[in-house]
Length: 362
Image (cartoon, rainbow, N blue to C red; front, side, top):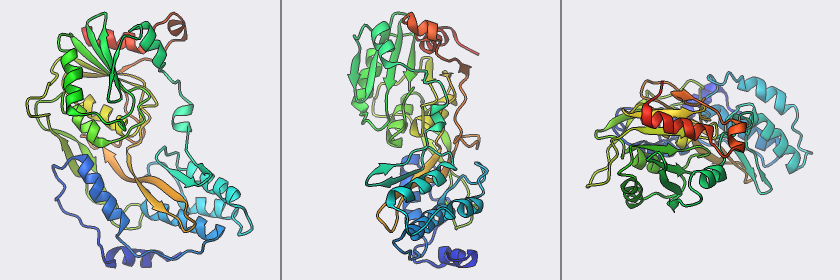
C-alpha cells in the first residue's frame, strides 16, 4: 500500500484533478451524479496489485479506504478491520473462501449500497431491512381495496379508493415513468380529495424518475438537498456541499395541489428514500408509515484485479436542512401493520394514510 503522503500526492497531481467551485449549484441530482462519477473514476494514479487472494483483498480494502464516504458516521475503524480480516487471507485459499472473507468485511459497513460481485455470487448487507417488519403486502391492497380492479402503467399501480382518495403504488424508481404516464395517473384521480403515493418496498432506481414525480407536486423550484464528493484519499476529504434543486413540471402537464400522503416502510431505500426526504419538505405533504431504509450514499463501482466488481457509497446526500439521510427518514405519522387487521383484510398503514389524507395528521 502506498503511504498517506503518496496517496495525497497522487490525488493532487494526477492528470485528471478533482475540481471544486460552484459550477454544480442549481443542478439536478441526476446530472450531478454523472459529474461525481467521472471525478471518482479518474482522479489519481492506480496502484498495481497481484491477482492473488492477498492482492485482491488489499485492493478491495484500499479502494474503500480512499473512496467510501461513511466511515465516521458508521463509527468504523477501517484500519482495525484491515488487521482483523487481513489475517484471515491466504494465497492458498479458494475464490469462494476469499469471497466469504471479503463479504464479511464489507458487512462491517452496514451499508445496503455496498456489494461485492463475483461470477458465482453477489454479497448484500440485508440487516438494514431484515430486522424490521415488512409492513407491506401487495396482494392485500390489490384484493381487499381494489378487488384487483386497478390500473397499471410504468411500474405504477393506481386507482381510486372508496373514500374518494387517489392511490398510486410505485414499486421501483428503476421502472421508466414518462410524463404522459403521470398525466394519465393524475388526470384519472383529478376529482379525488387527496392522493396517496405509496413507495413501500420501493428499493430505489433512477433519480430522473424521482425528480419527474416530485415536479408534479410543486409550483416552484425547490431546494431538494445537497451532495459532496471526495477531494482526496483521507476519510474526511470532501468538497463543500453542492445544492441541487427540483423544478416543477412544465409544458401544460397535470399538476397536483391537493393534500398528498407519502406512505413508506423500511424497504423504502436509496432513490425512494430521497423521494421521501424531498416530499416531506413540501407543503400539503404528510409522510406516514415507518422509518425508511436510508441509503443516501450515491454508489460508485470499481473492478478488482481478478475481475470481481465492488459497488459502495461514495458521495453523501443530505436533505435541505443539511441532515444526512443515510439512516432513513422518519415519518410524520408513525404506524406499523397490525397482524389482526391484515387477517381481516385491512392494511393498517393504508387506512391511516386515508385518514390523514382526508383529515390531516400530527
